[in-house]
Image 1: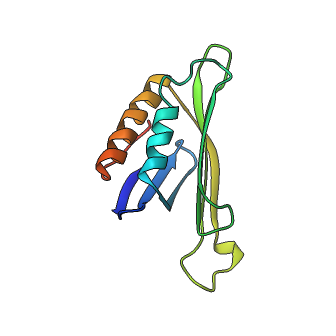
Image 2: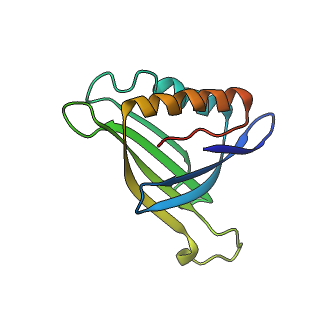
Length: 134
């Protein structure tokens, strides 16, 4: 996630993601408070194998949409994030087929989620920069 524009009330974020086989990019508007809230909810994730942290912004079928769902994939605490992205063509007369949609799972280590959390908090506080999850 990278903040590409900011204002007093909101920021525009470019999110790009890939699991090596599938990938996508979307741009969405949100607030630094929402980014900070996501970072705070990810602190210590996961504490229990049933923990889920979800973040959604935009609206399905709207101009853009991003959903991140962090969860455990097994009983020993291995983690993943389910990523769903949508973006409408910027063309006013866009056809439904011009809508770009992708959804996939990205498996990752809990320690990398914590690194992403710290970067996201820094990005929200400075209203600039990049937060990455590898």
